[in-house]
Length: 392
Image (cartoon, rainbow, N blue to C red; front, top):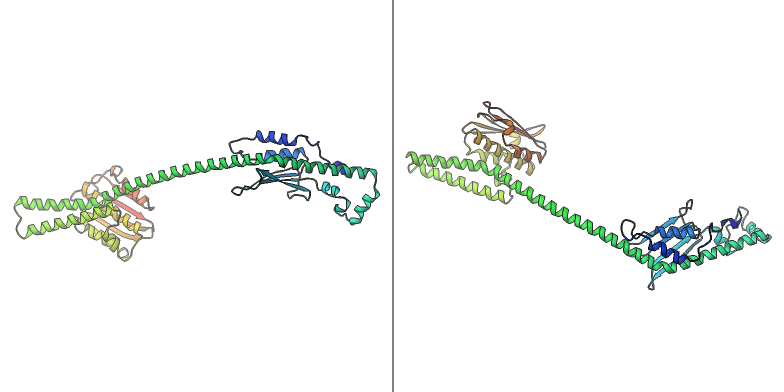
């Protein structure tokens, strides 16, 4: 291929600096393309028939390479790369690197710089030594083209300072806006999570007070009713009345302690210290008509705190519901370990309920939070059976 065929495909524009400034002025100032100098690099490459143009911004905070490559150009720069610094107010802000066809550099440097052929460098020298008019003219044309390209790169680098700094400012502004939006989104998400957490904790406290304290309050009500009946019937004497009042005072103290611990989010002492079996035994010890059956395997081990507290409070609430809707009816609580997990049942012999209207949604939600399930079987006249399982 004659060297003249490797000259630029189109003449170099005389006013390259003015043209590149016009292209830069048309770049978007906002949006996702703000600060992108690839259109400028493409315009430069097309005007001087380059193979590769890179505007390498040397911003210490956000260095970036705005790269354009001609179709079919090799991915790595050739040897014929002209590099010029870009200054703004005396400070280097970027490097303009323009890759030209390698043969221009070889021709401009003379025959000795050309890449050797299979016959060796002597063959290249012999070609130029022949000194044909066509070869000399082609070499001169390529050398002039290369020199013109070098001058064009220098002229472009001299005016790119304002373009680079403007693009960097736009990119920084876009990044700042993105960061601000992310910060606002994070704040909103944090606020939402905090509000949700507070609401969840409020509901949990309400549920714990309802499920845990209700049974003790019902028991306390029964004890007060016994004292009232004793006084009203005239059966009180110096032996029975002090015992009844002492029992009532003891129940009041335990109920008060339970309320304080629940409000503070503290696991009840008997449950924390003795485990599920001990806490249930203590809670139902004073409950009227409640029979507690706990498998030996359950008594002999401790479960994760969340499992123990969930089962404990669920049993207390279920027994309280039974005493409320089936007053005076015997209630049986059974706790055992199965291959499904920790299972428990609360059965009463009361008049029965419509299972769809038993108001056990809170118990279902409490169990569902740890993967547990609740099943209620009840019908008028047949009593109520509540069965639950917590997987382990």
